[in-house]
Image (cartoon, rainbow, N blue to C red; front, side, top):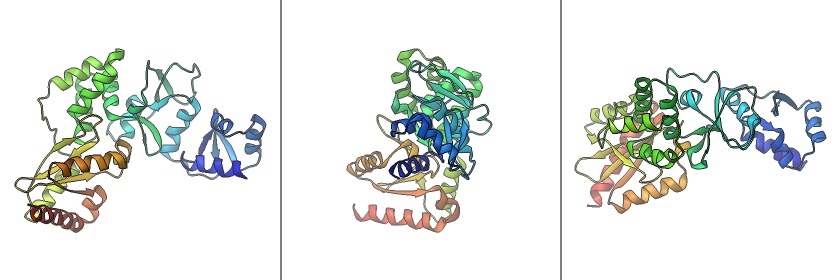
Length: 306
């Protein structure tokens, strides 16, 4: 019974998938794993991966299956990674993975490319799928694409608030020591952009700016935050009042940061004398009054603290 509960919990975190090595680590023998399949509750999804019978066949499940089948230190990478981060014009077919040489096994369900190192700090669980951080992805893009195309794609990641100049610089300093392909192109890309460079605003950012201006509120953009591991941009700052606003994405924010990072960023802003508020992309499009009221409340609080 406890095995069943442990397997269910694992599957819930992995889009209804479990890998045979994971089941072994839970204490199941090979025969017990085989009996899971013959029980009719689990089916072979592919390779070493089992799927809960009746589970929804989602895109996330399709991307996670080869990662679990490959095992080891493995993450979604290259163009499949770009597509999963939401870059238009990029395809996740075939699925492309980056893995280290610790295991010579190769899954049949993805293109596997081996890298010398895959530091855990540069891999994040994006909607439950181990995925390279955007900064590491940028290096892959310059390794795989024409320079001009890679520049466009990396600038899109920048405008989506998924990376920044300082965060690319950190990745280059950290990962460049291993001589990875794409390092030279990524450095050139950064050198061609002056300090404080801000790419064209996203539709979300423009929507917030227009919405606030329609209600007589003018905020200036933008402030990068996260001196070491970049965690996002404080998108808007009031010109005369110590107030800042951050617009978060439901899709990406939880992958790039966590509660502790958020708390530290908020503490830094408070220490610098700022009143901080955040709104979510879902509210920007569906509940504009909530956004306006949140900003007005924050400005009023900042004025009261002067």
